[in-house]
Image (tube, rainbow, N blue to C red; front, side):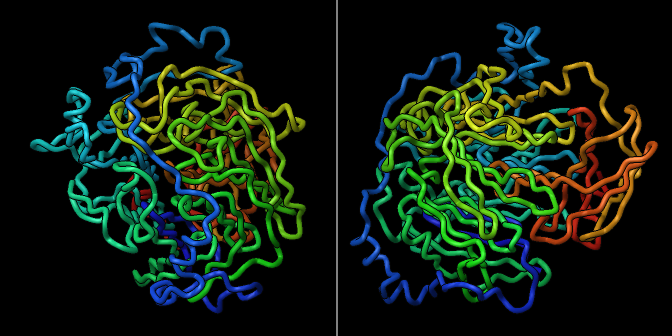
Amino acid sequence: MLTLAAFTTISGLLGFVGGQSGGPGFRNGNPVSAKLTQIDNMDPFGLTALLDGLGFPAAYLGKWPVEYPPELVAADPSYDPAVRNPINGNNAAVNGSFRVVGNTGIPTAHATPFANDLIIFLIRPNLQLNAGFDTHLQRYGAPQNYTQVGDSALTSTIYNMTDNTFEPFYIKEMAFCGANTLLPDGRAIIAGGNWGTDSSPSSSQPNTAVNCAANQGGGFSDPHQNNPTYQVYYPGNNTLSPALALTILLESWPVNTYPFAVVLPTGSTLVIAGAQIQALFLNYDEAVEDEEVGEFPELPYPVTYPAYGSYVLLPLQGPDYKAEILIAGGSSDYCANAKSLASKKSILFDASAQANHTLIEEEITYARVMPDLVILPDGRLFLSNGAGVGIAGGTGPNYAAADQGVTIAEIYDPSKPLGGRWTPVADSQIWRMYHSISFITKNAEVFISGSETTGEFRAQLWTPDYLQNGKPRPSISGAPSIVGYGQAFSFQYSNVSTLDRVVFQRSTHGNHMDQRQVVLDCTFSTRQADCTSPPNANIAPPGIYYLFALYDGVPGVAEYVSVGTTEPSPSMVAG
């Protein structure tokens, strides 16, 4: 089974769980990949030709000293601004509410939630700043609970969501700027990252997932730091396919880092890099276009690193499983820099087969770059984090690439008419810019943490309106731990008279490459739900999902279900 594809670009490797099965590859379109030998030989796919053909300069990260509000930099991890300056009050039933719940031990650039209520957080320990600071400890004055060994900071912690505590976790390799995802058996895989180990990254290795070198010295100007390839990882025999260069990643350089990727119902993968969009079958030996989906228009501006927007596949529901993609925020400039204003737009388009792929623009309430979109169990989307000015990158106030943190969250409701889908909700009062994350929890709340540039260690939970309106929550039991595709299964519910929505949902890490929600076909009798699992791996790629049951818009606490696999994960058994 093909489960993990990877795009290795300037500074990172993008991983996502795929929906294609083994055997012969998909061949219904034009080839859009090249072997690395072709790159080395400088054929038309080569980097020299690419540089000659670029119509815009590289995004530039200059050194912009910024005076962030002092109360927002290296804040006391125990300080909750919502306690001293109430923001929730009587509006919590409408806007939801934020609260500080714990200390993550490090700023959280990457997050991988496991099926036992544990999360692995990742960050870089040594940024080699021009300002003379070598570690987060020196820059931020060593917060009391900072993860430290000797004179250096660790790159990882394990956070327990049950009691909101963390423990140090040592990873020898530099996983920062890599990509992480969960395998169907519950294990995590981290691929790519900085070249080197511990705190000694290298920024000159060609065709490797090197450090975000532009964050430390200027622009994306060195083609040898570009690695526009993808690979397929096979966990069954622990092998990788050959690295193949993708045309879309070559043509979108220098804004091709951390491309967006979504497995579509056709079995192809939607890839967004810079301002380009393609649906591709990523085979072991060749990538080809998905002719059934067809071509897409170009976006009005790049939305991938460093001009980050956030993206999501809207909830899938049978029988047609319409695949709508929403992108929110980013930079307003085609060639953005640290002084560019953030975008105040969202872009919606239908990526289904033979659909009209017209881009539909709406205004979000607050312009923001580097935001995070999270699917809620009721089908709405939660938008948080980001900055009003700048781009992704930088390290701290002495070397910043963004400013003016946006603290007020927003809700996107796809059931409302176009033009009126965005609504502002609660205010977190904490700036969360570069290297911040958010994801849904099994309690149907949103976990939010991070912001490296302000040295932020506080973790927050946003409790949605549906948990504060006084309505009862469904309680479920007897759900299977494993289901195949197209399989009938049942579970029991209580505390409500019936159910009206059941979904499989997952959000496996901070960059949301695997975020997905599938609405299940169910019938409800007295205290029992009889459901059918998704029909195939294109609709629900194999892996571990939350099973949420809802009534009148209110979800219960989720159960873990392994979809499309034959064995439960060790973490599920232990948890």
